[in-house]
Image (cartoon, rainbow, N blue to C red; front, side):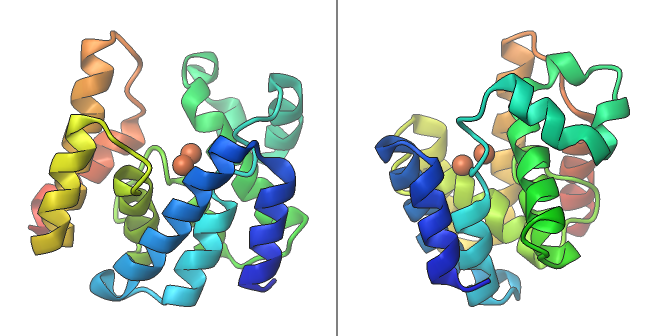
Length: 186
Ligand SMILES: [Fe+2]
Ligand SMILES: [Fe+2]
């Protein structure tokens, strides 16, 4: 699949607002990729695909998640924010035939995971600091990323966990694993 094809798939599936976010993430991913040691073309492609299920109904998401490992998760209902990422990864793998590295980066762009690959880290941070995002935590992490992308990733994970704690929301263990492995690697 080419970047142009991924772009047009995103354009077809998303509202103007979500497509704009996707464009910003794809652009940020291309820019961040070399700093994490990832390939800029693959990062941009993953950026265009990361949210293609963001506006789907729960019925479509659950159907697409049929073969995903999240479906056996007892807290699935309380991890609604992760459904679109896992569904997009399933689609990227099963329908688009993309390789595991791109599919995993899409799958873990919201939760993170233990031992994130360079492409995982690129997409997670690109989604966090894309230029359409205006809230304070994102502005701070964007500033940190100018200096150090690994520190920015850790900061983004910390804010994600803090935000979930403050909202009494379930924290996916993958996010804690991502945080712990980033702290260990600093
Ligand atoms: Fe997303
Ligand atoms: Fe996103």
